[in-house]
Image (cartoon, rainbow, N blue to C red; front, side, top):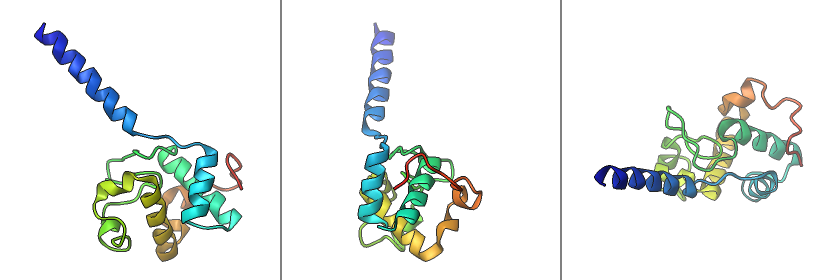
Length: 130
């Protein structure tokens, strides 16, 4: 009985963890990018592409280097360029905070801040363009 309860508790915990993650669709990414990053159609399309390759548009994407969220931003960004609206690295799981911070990174470091861009992954990308 104890094993059954333990297994059920683990399954429940895993289901709860997954339910907090949100995978955006193309229209949601367009809206988010236009609202927080840029209204320039070409640049917005590129930023949407970057997010696609960085996170598969999963707000809770996380990689071993501690990059987080849609645009795979580092927690250090909360401490410096995004500190006025991002208080802790976990705030980067919030899509609007991640987008606002991505806009700051873009202005500060340019598109090459993302290796998916500098590797050419977004060249001629048409999956979700404006």
